[in-house]
Length: 361
Image (cartoon, rainbow, N blue to C red; front, side, top):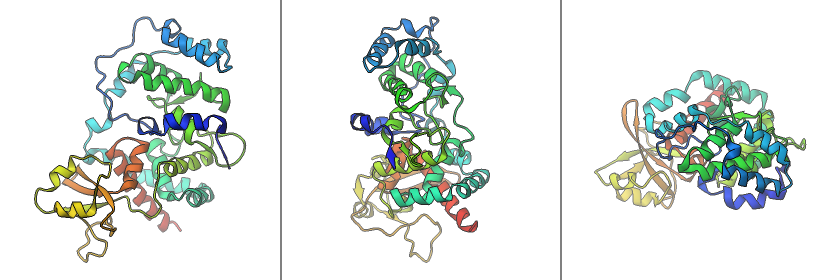
């Protein structure tokens, strides 16, 4: 198997592997509100000094100046994108409402069809990268409903809009725009026509351009790494993404938690990155639901060593407050999309898919 564009992989790994660039399918839940930002009346990006600098930089990398000017000259600022990024899902949804979007029987049935079609590829990805097929399936299901909804915005429009008309994260998106043209130059992606999400994510797994460069793989060894038209490459690339972000095979993702007292309050404020051990959680009155408990009321349980690092999640579910102890693998899911609601949706959808695939055997 050949990793995409090995010649520049090392260059981009240092700049893309950190968490700010790692989210392949970004809703940007941590971004500042954008209600005050609008598209300018003069929509000619070629007149922007930053665009001129980008063109000069890319030309110095042997890209065609006429092509760059043609594509960037045709880029349009999209008001809908500015409105979308101002309303991230985690700021408008609780877990109770968020789960209704993704935990649907129709999505599960679509997953079973996709899994049956690509059973061999999923098995090979699981063996190669140690990532369960149901996790891979859940990611692709949440992102694009197995390729049905890959996004309708031209990626060049999305990245130009956010790179030049969204000051709070302009630098980030300008890096993505530069990477898009590098992908065109080296991976035969048409920067002018390719479509994706409002944040410029592409393909089955909704990779942003820098993640495409860093983590996409040619999983069918046909000489082309294609995450838009080739589900085999998409499956392998999602698995590789998780592996590169330190997915631990066999480690449970999360368990429901019991609380005793108020010691949990300070732990819940620490966020979803595991920062304390199960021993420390127990000392604060927080215990994970044991799979050996005769009173088991949830499939979300684990029995892990006391030294295991965890985080405490406090979610508002359909029946009120839900408390969870999440492991490093939960945090790995958030590297794909920086949202605890997203990661919980992936976890629970993956459990539904595992059960459905077992029943389908």
